Image (cartoon, rainbow, N blue to C red):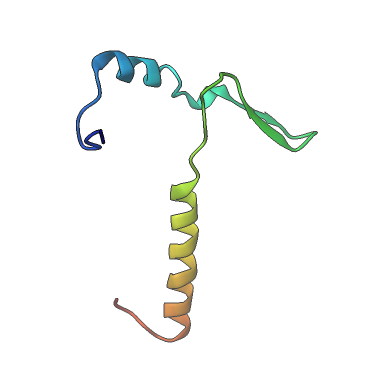
Length: 70
């Protein structure tokens, strides 16, 4: 049976997942140039950064060709 992906999860699931959300759990080691997370189950989503980077590149191309609106 396929679960409805638009259905709101149970309150217990939300609390469990929220406990994993905290930017302070990101461990940066500049000397070793590594990144880690403090807790099992945590992850980093860089999707927004990628979209912003792509948007900046597209904007640069538009400017190069004199495009002022899209």
